[in-house]
Image 1 (spheres, rainbow over the protein chains, first blue to last red):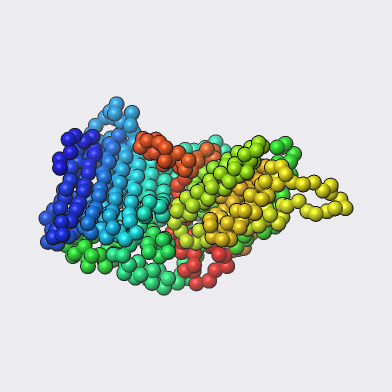
Image 2 (image 1 turned 120 degrees about the horizontal axis):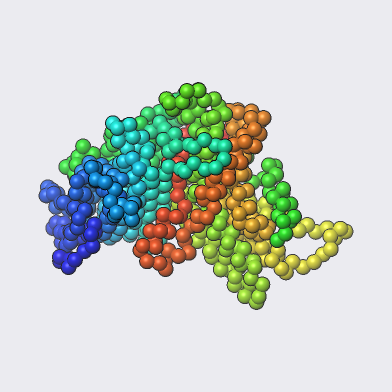
Amino acid sequence: MAPSKIEQGHGRVVLHNDGYANVFSDMSATYPLKLLSPQLPSPNVSVVYMLSYGGGLVGGDRVVLDVEVHDGARLAILSQGSTKVFKARPGQRLSARWQLHPVTTQRLAVRVAPRSALFLLPDPVTCFRAAKYHQIQTFHLSKDSSAVLLDWITSGRKSLGEEWVFSKYLSLNEVWIEGKRVAKDSLLLEERDSLPGPLTPRTLAESLAPYSCYATLIMYGMLLEDTICHLTAAYTAITVFKQHAPPPLLWSLSPICEGRGCVVRVAAKETEHVRSWIGNALKDLEGVLGVDVYRRAFA
Amino acid sequence: MDSDHEAYILLLLSDSNLPTGSFVASAGLESYVTHGFFSNLSSSSTTSPDKMDYTVNFLRDSLSTYGHSALPFVLDTHRAIEGALQDTNASADDAMDCAMARVQELDELYETMTLNHIARRASKTQGVALLTLFSRGFAKPRLSQHLETSVDSGADGRAASFVDRLKLLVRREGTHGHLPICWGVLTAALGLSVERSQYLHLFLQARSLLSSSVRLNTIGPYAAQQLLLHAVRPLVDAEMSRSKHLDTGLSKSSEVGKEDADEEVIRGPAMTWPLGEILAARHDLQHSRIFNS
């Protein structure tokens, strides 16, 4: 079922299961989006890598991906290295295209059928100096689907001294269950214009210090029951005594959908610390996705 | 609505003794202090900051994220009520029913956007307190010796019965009763303009944070007063100019095409301080605490 012609930067993934194994009835994408699916030992778990040519996106790039998961199939969407968002391609002068469409946009729309599951476990987004990025992700689930959505961002290229110096990052995650919106997570990070008045400007870096990586993890469904249960127990067991300086990592958990789902937020001074924390928090996925897929996501 | 009336309502609403539930809310400040954020996090600054600076840091980040996520809801709720109250013809009851449906939708959207159980809890407590304040503290008293008795058939009467209906609905768990929604209802019912309503909402939020600081003993009462005069005013002005025009985008989402939907999302409510979100959600984990949020 090859699509006749799809727009630039558009992609589509449709995964079925014929009773024996997962089958992609569609997997197509156009520049600058690239999709790859490796062969895996388990027939009912599939992986799609979402990649971009040159390993990054530039101002004006617009990526749109539609995903459907059917028949009880399990799909993990991963990336290879962080999604880098440039203001313009390195070594390239600001083009006319950038002037017209300065914002880089990634849009993901996912439908997960009953008993099926989606695991969105990409590497973090890294916005370079002066970049503008919008990410809009919508997830339509049925009440017995399962999903994990990881959305995270780093402060920039620390090696070049960049700490929260992009111009704008907007991330929106919407979760619908049986046609009812249950969560709308909207995060806006932007450098504020200095306003008239006596206040000195407060930078994004000051507001987000001392952390250089922030993650949001939304989970829902049967397959996450153990994970949610373990995390909730770990969270409620925490007792915070008065501290003299912020800890290297902080996390929070709030239940949604009467405890059938949850929203976890993590912040840490080091991105790798967030990665290992999440890997550990989602350890039960080894059983759900298989060790191989788990390692691909968190290695 | 004449400006004398508006000024008088402002005087009433800015009374810090009003039972609005804000006395037990610190909006994450207590957790911020406990987690060690009253410390020097920036290596670049030459002068070492003190508790006043830390307090203002929190105030700025907290007010910014609150303004960006709550003001759109105050705006849309206020508009809905104001519009319905202005409807004076025979269909006035229908207009109030429409406004009620709209308020419920906005309340539901605010619930789905407030993904932090502590903030949800605090917002609902304060919202319901405002509805109670209106129906018990702002109703026309029965003073047969002093006030002429008149039947409230105009906008005042309809506003009062609207608030009673909403209160009942919240009690029956038909809706959540979140703070920005109830604030929009209350101020529209009292005839305050939407801009005054938004401004006062931010001001009260800031003042409530400062009185929390005093109770936490991080700053003294005189210092809080200084900040109220010199820091809060420019801060509220700045957040107003950033967020007062934002709406929730709720009305049009079903009607417009994809391009416009993007635009709505981009202009809509959003949180701007993820650190505050984590700290606020960790409130109940503190070993000892004096606030509820």
